[in-house]
Image (cartoon, rainbow, N blue to C red; front, side, top):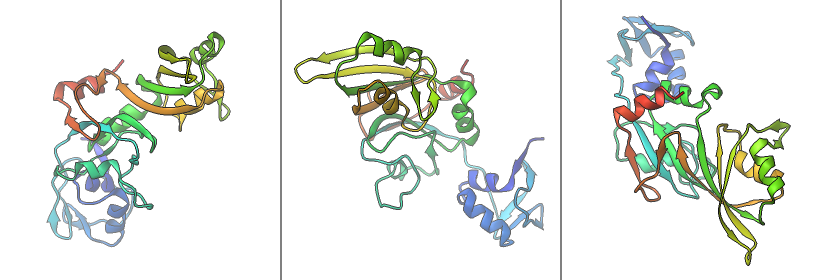
Length: 239
């Protein structure tokens, strides 16, 4: 039978965040099969009888949503600067969901939101190389050698990016700007912006249009839809 950390089980039941669950455990408020457990890191069987303050916990059903994140929204559950967060858009659902990875504050587009920790960890693990498609408006016009550099990998933060796909969507010579589609399999901090900056073309506007086989379809900014069981299963079995 599978074993999981007690604080994770409490968090996945929607009782509290993992950090708050840890405080509950240390405070002696959690019992497993009738016995108080105060040691952090304790692993429990999946179907153990767990109570918090004497109340049995029930695991939430698992749900994953495709969300069209607007610009000017942070990809966290809370923000100490008082900015709007992606979680604010899900106040009407009875589940505590969180983002799979993140999009920059000023970047819009496709973001997955879930309460399925196993799925989130799977998708964010580097070995899975989930393809992500971005559309960027950049300053200047890419030269052939710069496109080749992006395709082969450029160096930023002492890291060389993995091979990428580049497609020019639109060129505006009068305004000296270009719309470029970039497909990558990595998720380093500010990666797309840093890749374009490395070849001398700062990003003016950025959106993620596709994640694996998922796209935004008919969604508009700020909207979301729940993934079907078939879509979730496909995500769990990406090559």
